[in-house]
Each structure stands twice: as C-alpha cells, then as structure tokens.
Image (tube, rainbow, N blue to C red; front, top):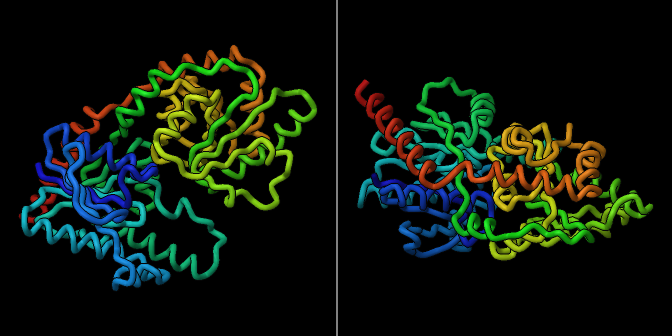
Length: 397
C-alpha cells in the first residue's frame, strides 16, 4: 500500500505531534507500506528509516507565507500547501490513502477526492488548547480553525482515535454521526526511548527530590494547578515539613513563567524550554516522579514515557487517559481536580515516603509497554483498508 502522511513537524523536531508522526510512519513502513511524509518544518527531500520525507516549508515572502500571517484566513495557507504537494505527487505515483491529524486541519482541502481517501487520526481539537477569554480577533481566528477541523474530520473516509474516550469526545466536538469506519489505536514509543528507559535505574538519592513536567504552559496541561501546587508545597518545605525538591519544566521556557509567580514557588523551578531527545531521556532518568496534571489528553505520550522509565506519575482524574493509564494500574496518585490544593495533596506523600515512590515505580514498570509498532502498523493498515473500501462504495452508490 502506498500511503501519505501529513505532519506539521517531524523528528528531530521535539514535539508530541512530531513523535507521533514518526511512530505512525515507521510502523507503517515496517508493516510493508510505502510511506511518504509531507511536513512543513523543513525543505528538501530525504529518505530516513524506510520513510520518504518531503519538506514543504513556506519560503519567506512567498504568497502562502504572507497569507499565513493573516488572522483567520491564514489558516488556509498550510492546507493549500499540503493540497498542492500531495495532489502533484499523487498525479505522478498515486497514493492509496492519506492520513492527517485533525489539529488545525492540514488536510481540510483534501477531502472529497474520490480517488484519494483521507483518514484523520484525532489529536486534541485546537479549541481545547485556546483561552476562551481571548480577544475578538483571536476568537474569530479560532472559529475559522474549528470550522476547518470540522470540515476535514467530517469529510474523512475513516477515523482513528487514540483511546475510546477520546473517540467519543471527538465525535461530540465535531458532531459526527458514526458513518465513517473508525478504530481505536494506541501510539507506540520510539524504540530508542524504550531502550533508554529499560536501562535507567531509579535515583535513590533523597535530596533534592527531582520532579519533572514535560509539556506546554497552558491550561489544558494543568500548568496553572502545577504552579499553585509548587507554591503550596514550597511554603511547607520552607517550614521544614517536606524534604528539598526541584521541579524541572521541559517545554516551558523561563519567559512563560508568570511574572507574579511567588518566590516560594520560583526557587523550586527550573524552566528548561525545549530540549533534544537525549536531554529529555536524561531528565526522565534523573526524575523521582513525573507530574502530568492535564485536564485533557487525546492519548498522553508523557504518561507512556514516564511509565516506560518506571517513574511514578502524578496526574489528574479529570483526564480519561490518566484514569486509564495511570490510575487503573496504580502507577501513581491522581489529583481529584486540576487545582493547586488537590495536586499538592496527591504529591505530598510521594515527597515524604521513599517506600511509596518505590511501590509506584514497580506498578509503573508493570504497566509499561502496552503499545508497540507492530500493533500500530497492523491496526492502522486494517483501518486504511476499511476506509478505502468505504470510499469505493460511496463512488459506486
């Protein structure tokens, strides 16, 4: 099968979408598919680990690059670039199917083509990552993005969700009627991540305890609750009731910390910004626990990475993925809500009790490795076949 995958970025770019794109592409290649990735984060063509990569970065000053600067209408720049590149490649050597994320709808202008079925693998809808109290311009901009996402998802020949709960959320968000073939397919971890995790011993040194957050400084990730919890626990540590601790923020640059962050919290925080894979591996290996208090995750790669390293995960019960991947196997405590007091209450026992940390570590290791490339590639190709058949049936109807 000849497949195309649309990606906003691709490794070595360090993002969750990039990691997911690589796992999808390489799992399909290992399953025997011919895979071409179209990505906007680079120029030129390359062949890496059995995958053809075509860079579509918009040249500065080009019409599409200028269009991208406009509010609202700028959301059409990337879909136009993807449409032109994919249709041109398809005319030369036809694809059987294309896949894209729903996030900001890169394939919004590739729906409805009878000769090229589209499959959408749903990440978190863009609406879930925005501040609802933004300016009128930002709300209009968001409205356009939402409409493009809805167009892409509704026009897809098949749908993939990372979890069943996420599939239900996406169906409600986009008003889907259950007409398309759909599947629940979990994402795998990169082999080098799994290998590094297997060889990472747990740090037994008591002070300072090293806590790790991997993500962005946004409400969906529970970042506000995280900072509030650090302020609460930092005050307790100053009074001598807790051992010293440090929280490393990966993906959060220092400028993203609020200007009014209390000093009692600031002195425990190290904001590192975006780091490469080797540095991230070292950060996981050094951590005594991983803090991931997201209010919502479509899958939660951070959960899977933390489990692979055998690190206790402090997550939030508001997120269905956290309940499934962390709460169910007992791999860490769940805060009842994404608030500072609730998160502090969940984390406090871990800071105090090394035996509790070791018990969570054992359960985290037992829960790791639920998803691999073999199942990802096999199940994705099976959904592709169903989507292609469904598209052919619509053509003949």
